[in-house]
Image (cartoon, rainbow, N blue to C red):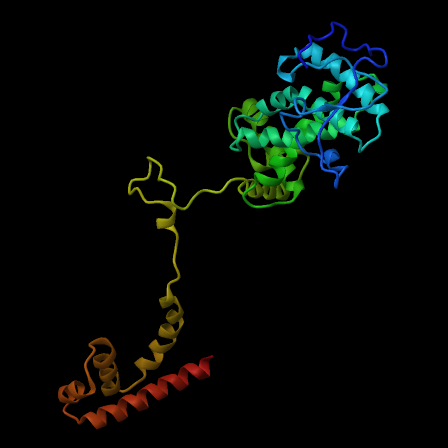
Length: 320
């Protein structure tokens, strides 16, 4: 590991001079190294030699390898990877080394999404999964540079991550893509017209119906969600949060229909019954106080009140 890199990394050395080291593993799971997991930084330093017939150049610490040397060494490792049997210690070592050599591709791709709200560590982790998939699918015989082949896979994996996790409310993929199309078309039309485009103009630009444009614009509202306790904007005079502006269940609304139905029935009652109702339910007097007010007994007030309420209740039942 301490030897310096050969100036010709893409040339395989003769047999018997430098066997490929292998990574320690659990005997109970020999194929675990092939699962799409990012390699540990100590994969190279913990490796031990094993018996092998095809050789690769000496490998210095990954962080000391220049980009052009990493590309040349990757070609040699891919050639070696194609000769090894999947699931062996040597295969796992070469594969893990390729992952570590090309992590710079993941960091470069992740930098394109640094303005997103997701932590950069999460984006790099997702991009590493894309790198592993690219390594597993790469074929040296196609004569394509590995970075050219890997970048679309890495970026696609990151975009898939944002598509599946960034939306506050899950919407169909068709509407997610329509949101992006509407954003691009809206910017282009705003530049051309020097104003915000209308729904009809967006529909004509994208070859869609106005209803589909409206559906896409409504779906775009599901991308982010505002906190109910978010501080108010400076333009809000009262400084109220969104939670303060939300409505609540008004149980009195249920009685509006009954009040409107009772009005004509109460108007048809005799004057004394109407006054008893007013003193009892508006003024809040007791039956004894109502009797003193009208000059009748409390028992008489109770009978009149019960008879009046039964009449009103029957009238409401007949209407329903």
